[in-house]
Length: 211
Ligand SMILES: C[S@@+](CC[C@H](N)C(=O)[O-])C[C@H]1O[C@@H](n2cnc3c(N)ncnc32)[C@H](O)[C@@H]1O
Image (cartoon, rainbow, N blue to C red; front, side, top):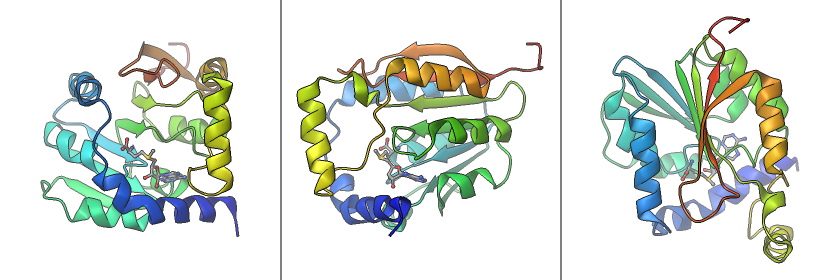
């Protein structure tokens, strides 16, 4: 069984529990939503990758022309689709590659997803190619190599027993290198919440090659 199939099965299995869990830090989540909201334009077409059970999409879609929210877990998307939402929001079962092969957008959003993908540089290159010049990518990502070794050991052990997803052990410097190498400029880096190892970035694809 492939790594990606195992990952998808993990998220399918925990989708109901994930949906039921209370947000750990409501104020931090609201502050992040408010930062994203301030960057959205009414005519934007947004593609969200790894949308989970759709909470962020449902909150933010009313601010833009169209929001496509994708996740490779059909259980996550099933829960998202059962929630009330506006007509300009579409939930799709799709992995990152398939989602990025779909229609163009002005902005890509990937909250707590990119530390889970097999090949971060390749995924960032795909996102960069998908965006128009001047387009934005908004991410929150775990720099798991920067958490204490005790926490890393606990979660690595849980992952062996499939009680936690397989997470790439990225350092903050790995993330910055991968973003720059893909061609993204960092517009903003902030931390929403209690973990500096889980930064939020707003990134921009240069408007022209020399920009
Ligand atoms: C940590 S959850 C984050 C969900 C949501 N973005 C949030 O912030 O609540 C990660 C989500 O990414 C999805 N996911 C993981 N790898 C993926 C991939 N390669 N393609 C699409 N979705 C993926 C999982 O199914 C899961 O719903």
